[in-house]
Image (cartoon, rainbow, N blue to C red; front, side, top):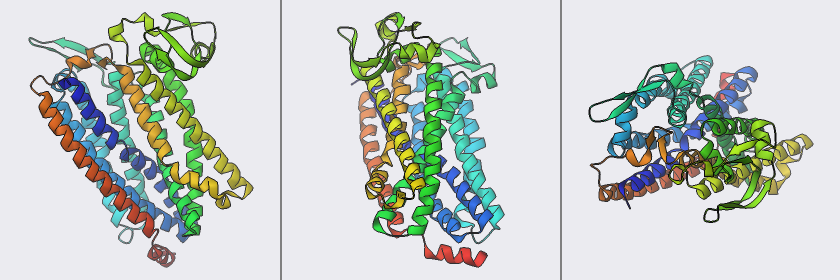
Length: 448
């Protein structure tokens, strides 16, 4: 394998593993604010016990997210030096903003959130919880902005150097508010809220099945369901809006996502199937004219297809198509599951419907899978460009790094990440098995 492919595999591995944790941190941060606000309003000790328990889980996911995120930034210098030289002015500014506005804000108040329950006033602790949640969201903002600029670059000009050219920012806010940034940010954040909500639903359903911590589990499940329903339905809306942006600025990606081949023809909405690239045809089931209708409001209007682009400018069709449709299927299932949970809650039978509780226990994997598939669709669908229309992935690597060096480091990453994942599962299992602490209720009663 050549060094570019190995570098892509290595970066894909590290970011896929890292991306398990930030969505949980972002979503749990919002839910912690909600839980602690309920405690301050009602002074019900149960809400403080809930906040303390989920804060411990938040601390674990935050630690793993920081540890696994650092590795990715080093790879820009080691494996992708040509890319870093070309976009350093643009990409570096977004990463610097993340450090200044997000990481320091989040970590600065994290100690108070984790250890300040008995050392600061309840209102000060609430303020710290809000700041940590904001920090997590600011981190998402700048990372998504940087990635979105790679998808739809604006606010820059290319400076021609003696040896190589580079992109320089000419309008910082045009770079920040590039055409895909805000809708992708909304979709990403909602995916994070959804991941945390289903994580809470999973643990709560586990306690209900085991007949343990029943009051805690029921209250947590109610809050998790509210967030899950809102985030799941809103994700459908932002996903549609994001696809409209893709159709305008990255038509080759949309064509791969939907398996649309004709250069310019009305397009159906693919439900499932695959693309026979040799015969240049889609094999599967689609709704005729529906993609044209969703994009243009007219089922007879043409949509640009893959054949409008030379083969070297087309993304890998079937991997993108299958990942996109798997993401859509998972998202639809999560909407149905959360709505069913709310319906049974309204009927008063949610906590006794054991088959549904078992489904909720394993449904924690659903948002994680959808998030990973969405990222895969976005990044592989951008190929062969690392910066869309400006720089090809094949030209972005480090000439001095050999395939053997990358392969050796990839093997080490696999071992380290496997060890980290085992440690994470072990610590998480210990915290869940131990459950919420009775002492937390005692402290809350005393504070009343």
